[in-house]
Image (cartoon, rainbow, N blue to C red):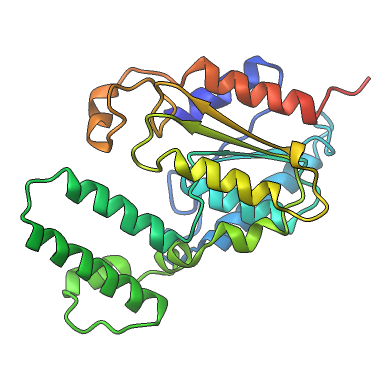
Length: 259
């Protein structure tokens, strides 16, 4: 429910908010197995165009907020559409998706009871899978069930996505929200992403803000450890009002209400 809770915090501040199920989810049409990050970005822009036609929406003040995987989608969408006024990235990776997946698996294995030999074997398999998906390797010695799960357009697009290659085309103000207890996408990613955003040519550095939120995990809810395995025990907890306040403050600053 984190998306609904964040939407509620923004709506309470007076913003019109649209959120929707991805392709093939709920009552949304389309097929998720054939969709890529770029396809999802086009879906976002279709929503942006829908909002622009509404009389109760100022089409010069439309922002995109993406969380986790959605941050890649938001960056791609913003790079393609100058009509997007600003961008909020929550729990965003700062490097290629392939590197993030390996980092996440290594973190999980480090906390496991597997032997060092088994850990190394699993990482080696992950590297072979990713190379095969990206076309720089083959599927030899990869189990069929693993290939069926990994050999998809979406996973290929996720592994290949690199924010550094997109950021130069994103001209909008950017807010980077980061839970300080995020173990899924650790806080160092927010710092690196902030550096990438500030390095954009002809875009003032003050159009980038990084906000780290103490005690919050990847879901922007209060957590003890921030570990993924803790998520199931956090049912009933809500997105921190501090996360919503940071987003509201950013939007009000860069998209002030017109007289």
